[in-house]
Amino acid sequence: MPPVSSPDARQDEHIGLVYRSGRPGQSAWSRIPDGLARGFRELGLSASLIDAEPRRAVARLAKGWASLIHGNRHGGLFAPEVRELRRVTARRRASGLGRFGSVVQMGSDFGVPFPENFVTYEDTTVLQRVRVDGIDSILGRAAVNRWVAAQRSCYAAAVGCCAMSSWAADSIVNEYGVARERVHVVWAGRNCEPRPVSRDWSQPRFLFAGLDWERKNGALVVRAFSHVKERFPDARLDVAGTHPGISADGVFTHGPLDFSDSRGRSRAEGLFESATCFVMPSRFEPFGIVYAEAAAAGVASIGTDVGGARDAIGPAGGILVTPGDERMLVDAMIAMCDPNRAAAMGAAALERSGLFTWKAVAERVARPLGLGDETRAAPAAVER
Image 1 (spheres, rainbow, N blue to C red):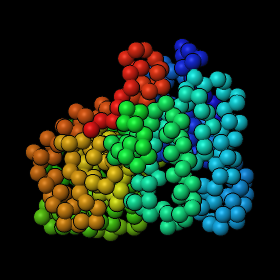
Image 2 (spheres, rainbow, N blue to C red):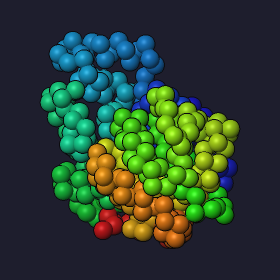
Image 3 (cartoon, rainbow, N blue to C red):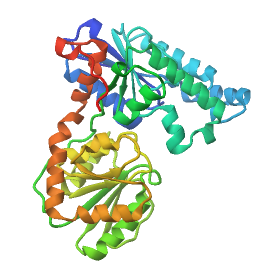
Image 4 (cartoon, one colour):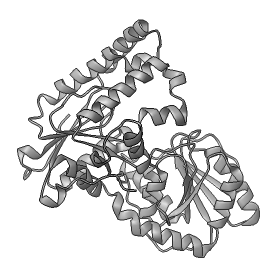
């Protein structure tokens, strides 16, 4: 995979961004590897994307063999043998990319392929995943224990642990025993750039967008909107992403939007720019880049209180609700039909949106790596 680089970058500021996907960095992990690479490029640093996932046929054989050895089809994904294969794959793919002065490691299921000067960057810990979506019941306790141990080893070896939210940072400190001064809340950047256009706040227009219909609580949003529609007949709900067929008064569907395609980004930006409130009350949300995208449009969000959405939305840029509480969601949506409140919270979201560019995130990740000028060298501890 070719490096994303700047001709003015020094060799000691060449950064490796290692992740595991089996997909290009432009589409892997919510486009985070590609976004962070672009952020480093804007800082004048050089960055190379490195996918630790082996070729599909090789990975399938390795996972099948590990599943037989460890007695669990899903647990084989995180077997030591598969982890070692990924580590070797990352090393091999990086061999032609030159020397790295630093590495950002996104994940812990491929060991530590580049141990010299690296930080971790994650949106959630394994122990949090056990609590919020019960992955132990799928992978098996033995596989989870191996994964936790691998994550703990990564944190111990890293020069710093970067987290997308205070929620994830607190788990790294309190559950993995990492010193608080070594943990850094760096957040995430947005993948599209809607504009804060003038809008008619008196016409409530809600937007839901999400690829995981079940986890994002899409059906709950549609049910809640039906109650809002009774009270505000002019209200509208736009639904984008992977969703079932929907036939409901005032609901308009748009299907999946491909942010790697300029037309998909343009469609998404148009939906944000026409909305008066973004709503996505997920069962859990490690961060929620889409909340930051709504903020860039000057639109407040109704989000989940489980996970890191609190960081993405901010104290005045929206309302947090308990997932599954339909009455609470209806009340929040009705509150956002007040044009004065929607406009004020949208303005607060917009004011904070500058925190969530990939350049700003790259600056925060660069600090514990000791990169760049002196202003980027000081570590940023967990924000409370």
